[in-house]
Image (cartoon, rainbow, N blue to C red; front, side, top):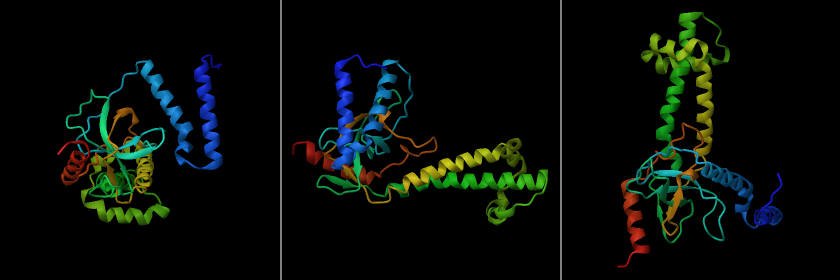
Length: 257
């Protein structure tokens, strides 16, 4: 496609030059993500001009969300960071949120988050893992006892472990539904893959984090990143003590004595 608008053409050439320079001198890592961000931003603009209808979640004050802040100018925050939601009365109709970005580095105007994000995620991911284990056991046990016995091979050991763990709560009727005429195992495997992706994602955030109270921002909810539909992003939350300390720091920074 020929670019007819001269300013858009010039911008495209500038972006190409910026990316090329950044790859050669490696002075700023933020420009490594420039192509991905421009692609994402252009797609979001297309959705906007085409009036694509979207539904949004409602977030509680103190919720932790994973945000793509994009590529910004100078020392403005760029790229992907966790953030704390500050809104007191968010609604599904609201398209924006006011947030505090989170960093693993402590600064003068930062407030420590009460618990590492990886640890917070476990409260949501472990129940999913438990259900995957139960569904896997139910399918295997149902097939062995209700359909036809077969050699478990290398899966025998894990089956025996699950038998000890879930045998007392096994129910043949519910197992039949989980089995789903043979389609159940594929669902379990798909869920397992998604869960592994989430575990790998959250393992990266295993350090103490700090809310950057001098970097308060209002963002579009379209910037929030979900790894998949099982992602607890937005369900994780800082505790009330952390919110109180954030409030104190914000008053210190932005309000007169």
